[in-house]
Image 1 (cartoon, rainbow, N blue to C red):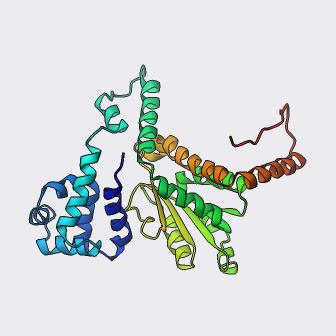
Image 2: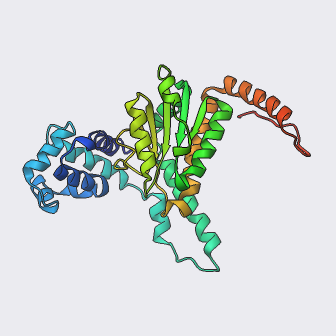
Image 3: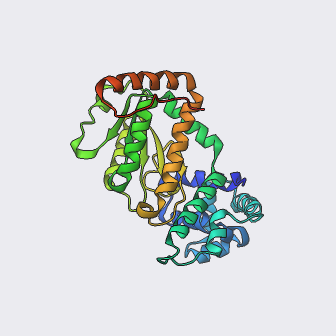
Length: 299
């Protein structure tokens, strides 16, 4: 589903959100959450709906780099016209969704996971995904950060990237010593931050601090208005069932797996060599029972 126009609007809002006035931020939320309102209403009506002024709506358009309300409205109309041509998997699932019971919960849970995974497949921005993979490959050092329940997927991503690329750290908060940012700032750093509502303040502080030190930031979060997306160089938006901690993990892990596999495919020879070396070292350090010889082929 091609939604380039609306994605362009969303990306402009993400990048400019921190510079918008309080009234303009109200309008931006409408543009993100209910774009159809902007598609069918005049600037004057949007001002009434947001309890702002028509001049504020126009200044909001200027702040995003548009020539006026008409240009913004036309972009949104085009994206909605394309999007209405078919329902997404999530909406199709919701049309027939039933309450969980002791008899159907297994079926319903797996059906929900499938629906969100299909939606993620439709919504993939392959250009953005390629940029994210290239950023991981280009970074001299990587720091993965995710606190509270995001610590589990963050730790998995750290382990996978450290195995196929190396020079990857897992930031664990106050107990960790992050002096490496200060002593090795001449190298290209990439911070991969995972955060979803409710957003831990430690993650937000880490992202902004490392960004100020010159690191590149890849944010994996729920949307353009997430507190970590404002400082991000790249944003991977993930739509998951709520609450994410108990229902959204399959979708999140699938996207993280796409990133890892992307690195493995684009840097196949080096990854293959590293995995073979990794296996040789681990075989000397650890004992394994009944293990068949592993095949590290990525194809």
